[in-house]
Image (cartoon, rainbow, N blue to C red; front, side, top):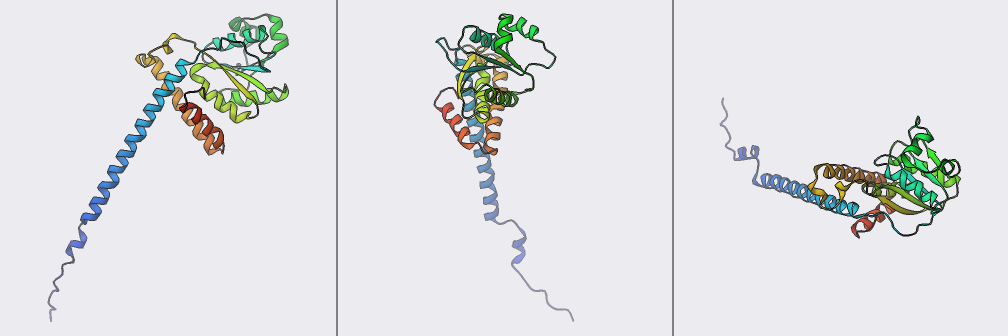
Length: 237
């Protein structure tokens, strides 16, 4: 005997309800808005970064510190400036961090200038560092050996924020004095009109953000917050 088929109104349960569709649309729109805001924030941050680092000037007044660290890479102006600080008696000792293992003191002097006696008495060459983190670690050992409490940090202006951040993480008890050098005219004035300078600054800004993020993950939240605060106040981070 065949049983009569029951009529049901449950066939609609297999179709997406209007609530599910609306919820999915809302989430998609939210993701789009957040992505747009995130991208806009990165763009604004990059423009501010570019404006700030291209506006940095090499100090013209008298400088006094226990020592100085010139970070290799970028322009030779970093090394030249460091040697001049030693020879002018602004600092008694200089660390040139990140020197290639096969580079001789004579070759460094050919680039940076200075008397041979200056290198013999007052200039140390660190050969372990291969990046900015390594520079900071090398400087940390050096300042401890020479009991340095105030350090002049010499590097290209665009590289200064990241260098100071890594230095602060490595040697938080040492007073840091930024000594930026502008190595090229490409960073003067309307830097965004030059493709080469824009790409260089964008790459450095990305590295800077990664550096801040790594610092936060490593627990250096206070130093990272101070860095961000200085950046937003328009001061040398």
